[in-house]
Image (tube, rainbow, N blue to C red; front, side, top):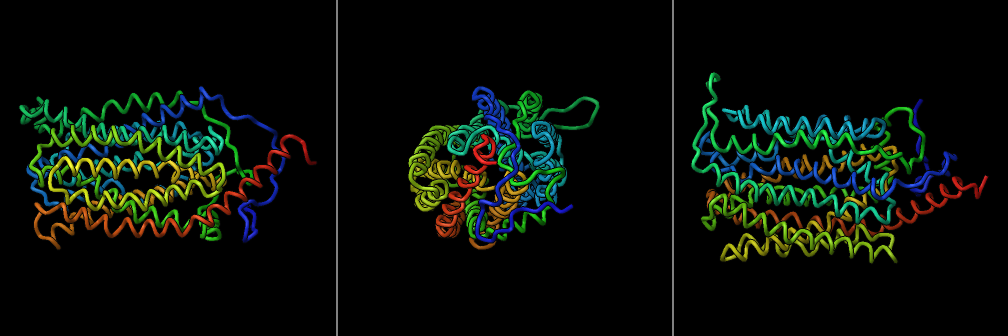
Length: 470
């Protein structure tokens, strides 16, 4: 039987749900333990994906690749299967135990990362990078779905801020750890594996070293308690069909479209910058890969916590008086961030470029906290996994798939000189980020109205659960 959501064309509040019995939120200690494991998993996901940005030059030299081919390994290979698997698979996030979904995904992408260390050709490396992407497909939907069941809406931004430490750690540590490992392996040109005929180069050893520990994180994920699902508008017996989810998003397009399209445009710039920023420092300022990773990684690790604190503080302050607090802070970040993202690659010396990169990242990560909370706060539980998958599909496939290649193609075919990569980075920021800010501002008012209606629904739920109404 088709599962119907409320059909009121103007309201997200929906019908008054049937009485299911009151239930409290999980204990704080349990919730924060879960967040710590989620953050650790996110750290390794970003570490495994990001470590290759420091290995671009040796991989290019050993495999004889162009910037455009490297961009396919950095972005497209990792996200290509998201287009086919992410959304259909996310249906099971809404009905299956989410911690086991997460554990299996971590084990798979970690194995694929280690296998990158035995790749001998472009296509072998491409396939293993695709495997990494497949393993991480459901990490975001399952994590955010559980987070929204661990924390009430007013505490969710703070919890997501802590979760973002994993994202920050992955980006920063991938640079710092990569720098350390590369420095350690500089004197090792290759290692022959006895009896196999394989010869491992030093960059391949890096993939193996960072991939294997993820298997421990996969085991830890199974110790996370599965929280009871809450915030459902209907009772599910099976996963909600995707067409119903899309129909719901279309019906409430004023709320969701700015979030999706604003993220899509901004993600092209952010993914492209993450992929090529270390190479930019090496080519423009003649820094070595270890030096680039160490300095840039430390700068991001220092700047990001300030961004998390600022974004969380500003969101909580606005939330006292405004229903649109989450999306308003995102729009503010999208408005200020381009100043540093555009200017950074054009700086006359590397230290000013590092400073600009750190400030741009600080502002961006400050906006990421309310950006993720905004979507979870306005989306019913029974479709939260699929909606989050669609949202992350936009981030991963459009951003991760297009961003690195956009910059590479602009460098190879418009500028025609890979030593002028700085201009490709600046042009990308100048085009994408102001457009993303305009799109996000267009949705602030509708989002505020939607949150007000969600609050009404929650009050109705509370009255039913406590027996205040029949």
